[in-house]
Image (cartoon, rainbow, N blue to C red):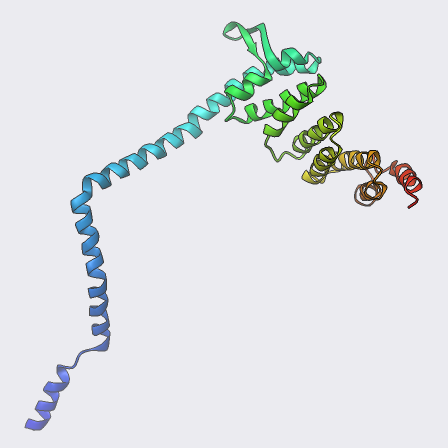
Amino acid sequence: MADLKEETSVDNTETNPVEETVEETKKAIDPNLQGIQLFYEKNKNLVNYVGGGLLLIIGAVVFFKLYYLPGKEKEASNEMFWAEDYFKVDSFNLALKGGKMVMSADGQKQMMGFEQIADEYSMTKTGNLANYCAGICYLRTGKFEQAIEFLSKYDSDDDVIAPIALGAIGDCHMELNHLDDAIKYYNKAADKSRNSFTAPYFLKKTGFAYELKANYNLALEAYERIMKEFPKSSEGQTIQKDIAKVRALGNL
């Protein structure tokens, strides 16, 4: 019996493997927790300062997005009203530069042109659109380098205006006799949005530019894309004539 009791006593003192694992884990974690606590105690002023700074930054971002930017967007839209009116009647210099006295809800004021709107409201969607409008004004008045500058600033994924802006840069290069650059931008415009309005229109311009370079093979490729991909477009309904022409010119 004494031997049995002694054996029982020995068994009771054996370490449980689960408890051993828990204790080892605690030993591994506790120093880290203590280190963090010690760091906070020593640097709590700095931690609180940094935390407060982050809150200020977050607050500033929220204010900017919810209050400041919408206000600026409204201002820019109001300014665009007058410039767009003059743009519609082909008064491109007034639309571009502004300066004319107009009546507003706040009384008489000097209107802004697209250039000034694009500059002063550059963070807004309207300011971005003003870049496009300014570029078109310069294109229509034959100032192609300036047109390229403003059209290149326009940044949008709009299905219609975005490809037209790229195509307008192509038009500027065509006017400057930069055929390779014109082709590059016409291709970009055609691929920007594969709708049946802009894509076949700029593919046809691509083909025409290749014709000017006497590269009839690539002109044929552009025209055949219109026939295959956009047969119901206005360009697609008449493209057979262009295909026949380049085949004859290039003996294709």
